[in-house]
Image 1 (cartoon, rainbow over the protein chains, first blue to last red):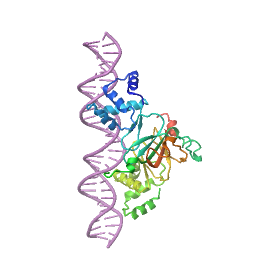
Image 2: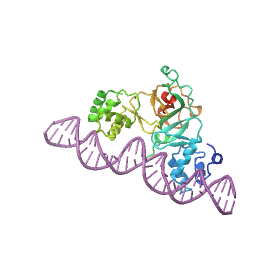
Image 3: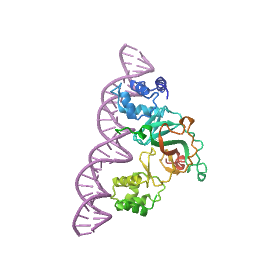
Image 4: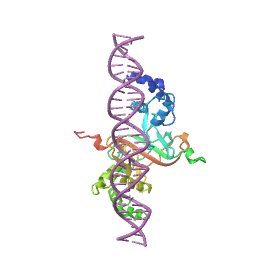
Length: 146
Length: 146
DNA sequence: GATCAATCTGCAACCGTTGTCAATTGGAAA
DNA sequence: TTTCCAATTGACAACGGTTGCAGATTGATC
């Protein structure tokens, strides 16, 4: 994902206002390896800006997503996850704690059965998502108090 | 998915009661090619049993899912979809109308990048889902009034 | 048929998310 | 730098999908 400064410039170019709330959200997302929910972004930003509204966080995340600077993921973990990594890739999700990690899989060799003859039931497919599910390292080896 | 009679027997074996509501739901699901939401199952069953509660439909679908007779899918279409097909397979989803079709893809050749060395960031993976997204046939060729 | 736990219905509550709208504010223009 | 206005914000209500609850009902066993 672009740096806070680049995102600021991008917003400016689109005629959008540069508000402290937006800048704080850009900073919170920058370099994030986790795939935070809106709530998680909110909590992180609210540390330094307690007055910010969750609504504003949703708004900004949606803005970024529709600009293609962020990918909104529904991984079945309850809340949507926002992925700052816009390169094509896939995900592993922990069934227990919901942790998400990026996976770069070579998808070119997935074979569809003969019967589909290269088309998918008349669908024109524009994207493919692979989700691996299982247990993350810490959920495989729970501590004594879990 | 098993026939209504088989499901009935299965419920009986588990000590669960055979109620008309459950039987009606079994029948509604039997041989279903679509991937209905709970609401859709409810509407279909309610035709012949107007007094049935949506709550009961959810309950029975969840029961079937936890018995492994049904797969609950979250395909990002708003409501959960219930798939009577429990064979391992994948899905195409229409981005516009939410239609879902089964896909049998040979997944054995998906290659993970060298860096992962056969493991996925310490995750023990127990399942893999592929979701193809795009437009179904009728959404590619919309009629004049759509 | 009587009994009783399992089940059903209806409704309230829940969660994540979005609509609404008055109040506030960034930033272009003067 | 002040003015102005549309964009944005924050608070709160509402939404859709799903589940918890409680009291009424009903299958299964005897």
